[in-house]
Amino acid sequence: MRPEPYRVFKSNIVAFILAPKITNITPSTIVRGNDLNIQFNPPVAAEQKVFLLLNSSEIGNYTFPIPSPPLGSAAVDNLSINTSDFPIGEFLVRLQIDGAQSMPEIDQDPQITP
Image (cartoon, rainbow, N blue to C red; front, side, top):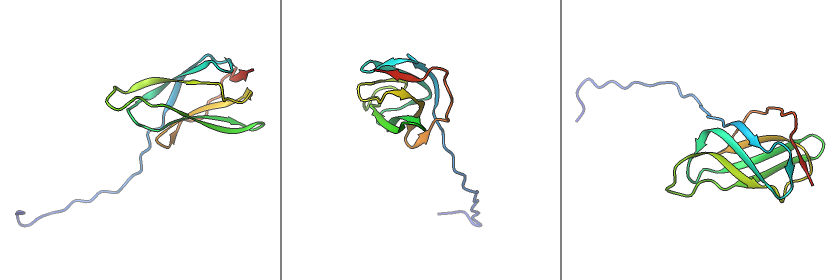
C-alpha cells in the first residue's frame, strides 16, 4: 500500500546512442583473402549485431556482417573479418554495432588490393 499523499516524479525522455569508435585497423592495405583486424571502443558483448561498412563514392557502399562473441563469453574490443568478398578499391571503413555507426574518419591508405 502506498503512503498518502503519494507523489510521482516525471522526467524528460532523452535518446542516447553509444556509437563505436574505431581505434585501429590492421593492415591498412589489404590483400584480398587476408583478415582485416579492427580494434574499437566500447567493447562488443555476446550476440550484439556487428557490421563492417565500406563506403566509396566511386564504387558504392558495402555491408559485411562480423560474427560477435558467442553467448556466455566476455565482451571484446577487437574483431577480425576475412576479406575474400571485399571489392577492390579505396573505402571509408566504419563499424556498426546494434544500429549505432562509428563516425567517418579518413585514413591515408585505406585500399584493398587484389
